[in-house]
Length: 97
Image (tube, rainbow, N blue to C red; front, top):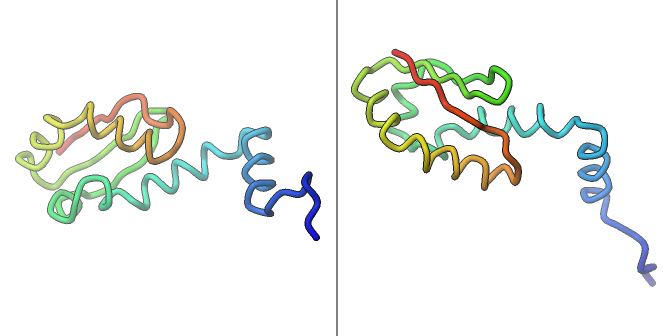
């Protein structure tokens, strides 16, 4: 019989991370690792690297054309990433080529 005040291990870890401000680096790593899921295979293929500088996502592209295409969808991309992350992880994205 399960007590009503019991929580799953995942919930306990998530609460601990939120309370100790450790969630942000983990979420940021998750965003970087899932870059292809956010932008698709074609855009990911032209990406040299993705990294965070505070709450800004820095993206180095191999192609100026791919960079311009991602710049056109920057706002919805930020919203999609933040929605997936469950918090305001990305305030801005800086693309360069």
